[in-house]
Length: 168
Image (cartoon, rainbow, N blue to C red; front, side):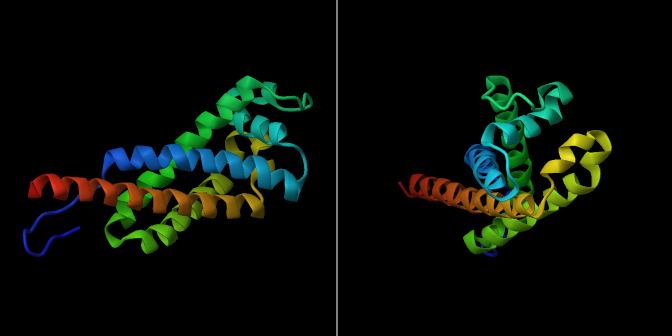
């Protein structure tokens, strides 16, 4: 943000990006694990296996539908990386406009990431295309909004602390 009085340019806050990404990644995985089975069928562990297949390949895919720690942690890692990417894009593009724009900017970042995955990922792993549904697009938009809002909230809290330190 350009401060008209001081002529300073604010850059994205890395700590806020990482913090928002951790929470956003948990939201991504939670929404995928809860909403996708409700709308498209399957179970949470099946969805986690599909997500983890992007990292581990076909060997982790169902039929075993029971819980797998490897699939869970793989899908968690990918969700955290995806949230980091969405949050970083939101932070660098929309960070100077506040929480409301963070909401819509985060949703836009999520939809951009979904479109990227929708167009390119099936070229690399055809089986992952099963997750690219309208429900997934909505999940990307919702979780992207959460990432954008959380970034703005964490950034504003840090600014308040820095302003209070400067005053004392």
